[in-house]
Length: 127
Image 1 (cartoon, rainbow, N blue to C red):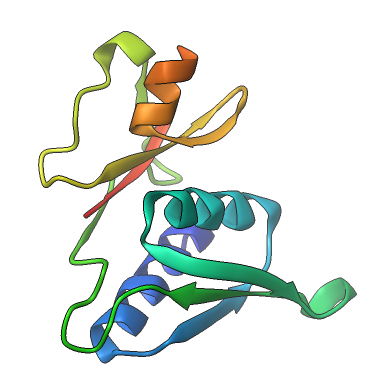
Image 2: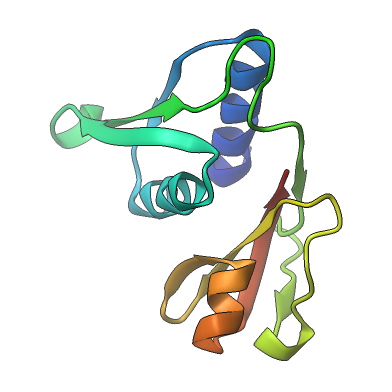
């Protein structure tokens, strides 16, 4: 399974179950995606734990049991099919959420990428 989609699904399931935090295996791209979620208000905080091969990323979720912050996730890019857009083609997310993009300048939300005039690969939409 794709590690990025696994991360996003774990976060969504933890929100739906009412957990306060979720731990996922660490990688730098996952850390950057979690920082985008934190800036957008979908996560309350994040922390890298462990050493060497046993590093994990603990993400504190901002939703409550009766009102989760993340209602849905739609994955766009997969290992077999990548979806790229220029910054001119970026529109608002239809569900009122954010797009998560990887660009040559880093990982951004859709609005941040448009502001930076940087297009790239659309990973997912989170609302």
